[in-house]
Amino acid sequence: MDDKRRRARVQGAWAGPAKNASRPASQPVRTAVKCQRWGSEPVIPDQQFTYKESAEVNRRVPEPRIIETEGTYEISTSPCGVSRLRLFPLFIDPKEADWMFEQLESEIPWRQKTNLGPDGPYQEPRLTCWYGEVPYTYSRSTMQPNPHWHPLLTMLRDRTEEVTGHTFNSLLCNLYRHDKDSIDWHSDDEPDLGRNPVIASLSFGETRVFQMRKKPPPEDHGDYTYVERVHVPLDHGSLLLMEGATQEDWQHRVPKEYHDRRARINLTFRTMLQDGKK
Image (cartoon, rainbow, N blue to C red; front, side, top):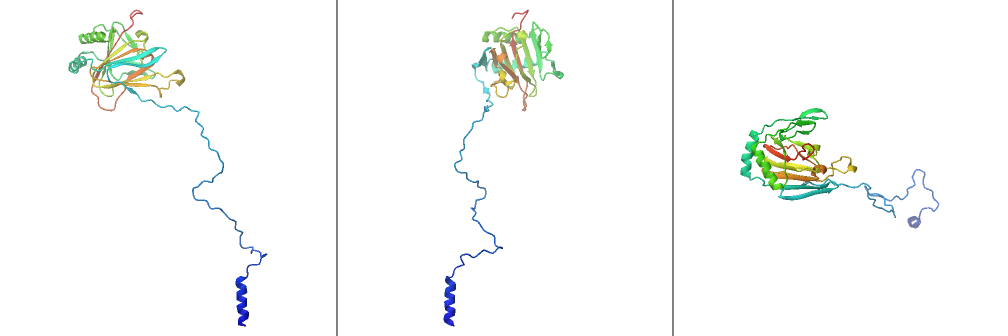
């Protein structure tokens, strides 16, 4: 009996499952599945990746050019001509400029001009005074002739003519009382100034930044985003001369500021047409 049991155990250990045995219906058939790590993308063999350049041209907004040292600067050239700036940072000695500023601030008959805009009349955010034999019209409002030049203004005009080589018969005075006084983008291109007028800008008092931007080409449809810009800090006693096509091709402004600024006086000498002639 023991021998029969021993032989049965040995035969059972070597016996394998029946070759044609069927799997019970309750057990699902398992197929091999390739595991994929979390977050990985399936690899597609022989796939080609090509870079296509965008059809749109990436344009950068240019940084403004800063002009603050004495010299002559040709800032652009166009069919209208060369736009030129000449800067004289110490045109008036600082101590001499101090008493000139005090005299001009107290003795010029300053007033606030009313202009006409698209939304109706508005007051300029600064004070002005006009000197000249002829009236001056801008922003649909006219300043009447005023031939009674203050003696200090006559002296400053003579000195400016001597240094620049240009002659001037008119003067627009501007008083910026504080940081909120300003003048918006514009060009001094009124018909009464003639073609390519020369403007001499003499400053006293607080330094303000004179900003310029080039007029955009026709294809930009009046968009000033990508135009060239020039910034000129105008210090106490400095003189800036704008010549050539500057008024035709560029605009300028003195913007409002967000820091306290004391008063600034700006004298802009110019030559007005008289009976159709300068």
